Image (cartoon, rainbow, N blue to C red; front, top):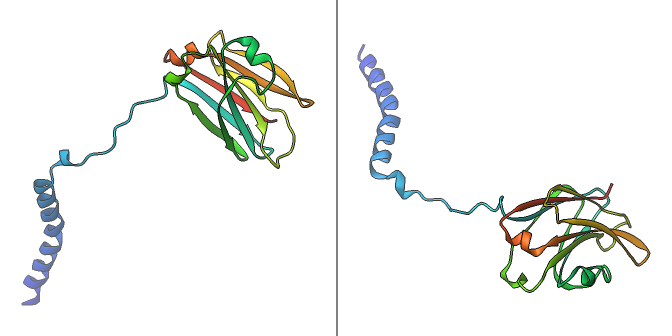
Length: 169
């Protein structure tokens, strides 16, 4: 008979302990003291590329040109801005954010080449979300055709969002 009050006391202790813990924690730890990071959304500005490569590695080349004729001189003409590389992927996104150093240029040229040691193949270019002044063209370089995208720098800087896809199948 004396064990019954002890059992009831133990059950009450185990039942009230979590409630007491939550009360203490919520009282002494203000919710506003917990902070995360704050970031701005880049969804509505710049240029996004989706590279789908089933055949291996790839290199996305970015060139700045002062005119269309400079861009069209050869595949590698213009000022090289960047090269982004990746491996076999079903959907690799590359984000191009506007840069103030582009102010003296009119166009950006983009193309994808197979990466080093990867089989030779052509990457098809598709504009999924684009402006009317985005041009898709082909250029011959070292005996192979490349799909080239020409984008006016002013449109990349105009807080518009463009989505372009390169596929190797």
